[in-house]
Image 1 (cartoon, protein in one colour):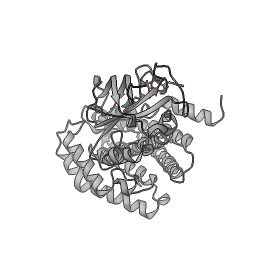
Image 2 (cartoon, rainbow, N blue to C red):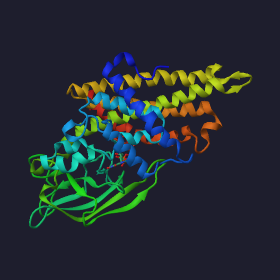
Image 3 (cartoon, protein in one colour):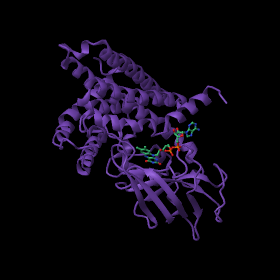
Image 4 (cartoon, rainbow, N blue to C red):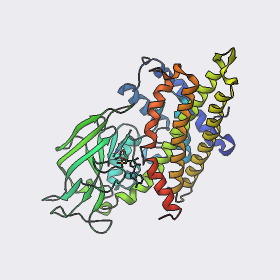
Length: 398
Ligand SMILES: Cc1cc2nc3c(=O)[nH]c(=O)nc-3n(C[C@H](O)[C@H](O)[C@H](O)COP(=O)(O)OP(=O)(O)OC[C@H]3O[C@@H](n4cnc5c(N)ncnc54)[C@H](O)[C@@H]3O)c2cc1C
């Protein structure tokens, strides 16, 4: 079974994926194999180790420029690596690549000083960050913000509000907090040039007035956190991009969202391929009624449909990553890819679990874990419904 549509890839990309897979096999899988069988979240020191080692080898934040500690890879290469990490199936593999705790494209809009101070350590994997955007009353409608940033007496800013469902808040060195810049009296102003509106701030996690509130344990993975900002005082240069960055969070975030959605799509394609591989292997061995279950057409139907859907999803993700590399507008395509791959992955894991019967349903089986893990993929980086809204708008629907 082909693992990647090799015919659509250039030799250099295939070589890169092989070298990444060899790193996973030689250095990462043996560490994961030592973990207790019921491990869902690898210990922090192991995750830190594989992240830093991957950064040393140039895989971790590969699309960032070499002068910042990256490898200057095209975005397509990054997408291929995420795909390979998902397909690998090792619990530690996803931590070898920059995710929601790694460098943020938003910081590319930073001033020279911000890039040096905050982005470089993130690219090198020596620091972590979180993104605090969602609020208790505003998720999909992300810019209906109640978190406010007021100009403070004597210069700088005072931030107050509440953020929720923040990943990595317990481990991060900095938070990128999206807040509405208001007038001194708290009156909202809107948009670039108006002196106000949604703005991205860099907030050190030890800033006085910032604290972690409630934590939420989800179906799988690490907990999410509430972040409470209670009059957090920040210097004037805490705005990403300096004074020119005020009111720019929505526009600057578009690049992040397109790339983020394609990374999620690639992870989903990899997970789907992992699930398919497990299903095929099991169907070749398991017997019922004196035959291998893979000979039953109802079982074949699960695996063959998945195969066709996964190949289609992969090609869509790769084609869209190419558009990003060509500098073309890819918002609608990224929405289509994320929508397709996330739904495909959920179906792929579900079908493979079905092929495994009770064996796959037992707590601790890799497919049982993937079944819970993959469920978040239609919610993060914009829900399925929001992707459909983007596509409908691009189709000219009112
Ligand atoms: C695992 C995980 C990690 C996360 N990490 C972070 C993080 O690090 N930082 C952060 O800021 N947030 C994070 N989030 C929050 C995430 O961004 C939000 O959950 C997401 O944006 C959806 O918002 P919501 O949950 O408030 O749902 P809502 O926006 O309340 O939506 C509820 C339902 O209504 C639908 N809906 C909403 N608007 C429309 C519309 N216009 N048309 C059609 N349907 C619509 C949605 O699709 C959904 O089905 C995380 C969430 C999860 C699950």
